[in-house]
Image (cartoon, rainbow, N blue to C red; front, side, top):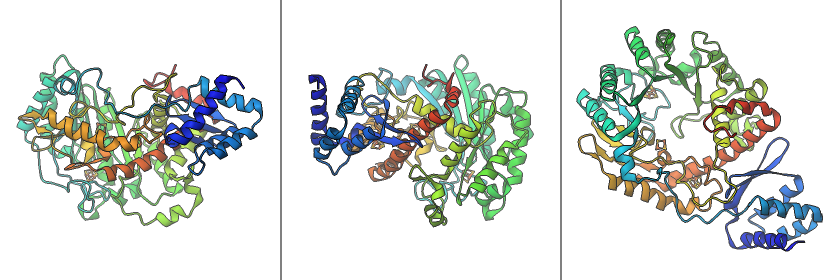
Length: 518
Ligand code: SF4
Ligand code: SF4
Ligand code: SF4
């Protein structure tokens, strides 16, 4: 054996003994193949069965290196050389030690980002909602967020928030309206859009709004259709039975008919506009394939919407919905997917494999989730040499990526966090030192020991959203998400390579995507 390869063997034996092996990568499978994802470079290499066995022993916690040596020595000389040559030339198993986690700051500092590069204003125009969805995070039964409130944003507050974002943004900025049900405060939404267009003249402005649609009138729909670059996310879970199971008015009253009326109204108005209408559906238990098929048929049959209407579908947020069907799910192997219980992704992969992914014909519940997954894996960090730095998970630049303004003018980092520390208010602006301490330093200090041992550090999308309470970071809660996310990242790798093996043409859908590889 050449000296170079002998040294490589000794190096691998040494890291197995001295370092924490799981951080160097992850083994995963598809229906037909074995692969290894390398943390240090982001590369994925395929392994035959003997190599896979060797890597399994290498990553086994029960082996102090002796079994690895024995399995290695059982390989033919050619196999041994190939394995070592691949590790050496591809620079595998060389992830550098994690000393720090870095926010992606575009080479400028936090203060400059917060003062001059705010990207999005999110206005909580009302805390009120005319629905009482059973999985709502504002439900009295869910402890992770505030309960339904009575706060309503005054025009003066919205105006100051728009002044703030225009003064602190670069050439591009978006304004989002959030609730409760935002249309309950349509007057402030309309005034805000008109004011932002006037005040932000010269900037590249866009708008977005999420609504349950039941309060939509013809006048509102025509106004939204006339606003340049506005996207509308309509909440609709599926056909009548599905929608009315959890998406209800108070007293359990059904919402399907009113929602559909609102959706028709907006779709009519948008017919001759460039503005985009998307749908968000929440899939509640029971998770049976008959039900998932029925939801898909329903959306595919909504002929009054363009064929390329994007439909997002998610499970309810953890702990927001009672799960009485758990036993039926865990005791039925048909719902297992790469060892995890995920009936929806399993169904979506099957659809994508059989029907393909077509951007122009995506009004279904598998295109958008599969497309997003493929983009994420395809666009992951990759390098010939081991990375020099590690990102701060999926964290944004707090106070710059978004400014979330509550009805009373308080500023928080993001509407997806639930209750989180207040960073200032619209009168006094953002307390930059508090952002640095509470969201940058405390997050990194609490996370670094876990992340240093985690194979997913370069593809991790965790952020403040799953980690904070009103008083700051809650590391135990974050760890719960980490476990779920690590499983999901591994499954995503399996899905990507399954689709690549079984229907390689499917990756054409990524052409023209910002993440697509040449
Ligand atoms: S419409 Fe939205 S805010 Fe209102 S109850 Fe339903 S999930 Fe909650
Ligand atoms: S979801 Fe996370 S990364 Fe995205 S804007 Fe909110 S806090 Fe930032
Ligand atoms: S999954 Fe958790 S431990 Fe792993 S890198 Fe992400 S935040 Fe860190």
